[in-house]
Image (cartoon, rainbow, N blue to C red; front, side, top):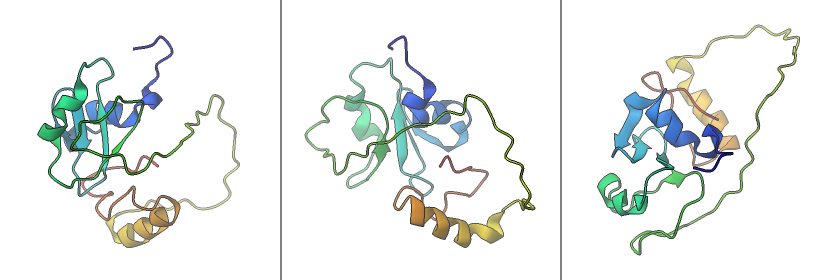
Length: 138
């Protein structure tokens, strides 16, 4: 790994091997979320020949999102879209002076949460993204 490597360079991998291990499917070096929850996947940045493991993790016609740089995919995979993304980090929290009453959301708000996130991030999150304690990363 480069000296300047940070967890946000490969957020799905770090989430799947830390906070979200209960949602991880795959191998020791390449993991994905349950495809009914979210289509994110990630790989160990220190692993070699990682894309030889794709057929162990994905089924025919599975779609998935992957973060970080990666080498050419095997011939039976294709890149459909490359999304340029900026990661933002708050280095110094500001007092926002919240004046509204914050209401915790739960399963009764599922449809509204999914509708809202689908407007902002269409296709990234699925209807079951908030089940079983999964917390949206967006």
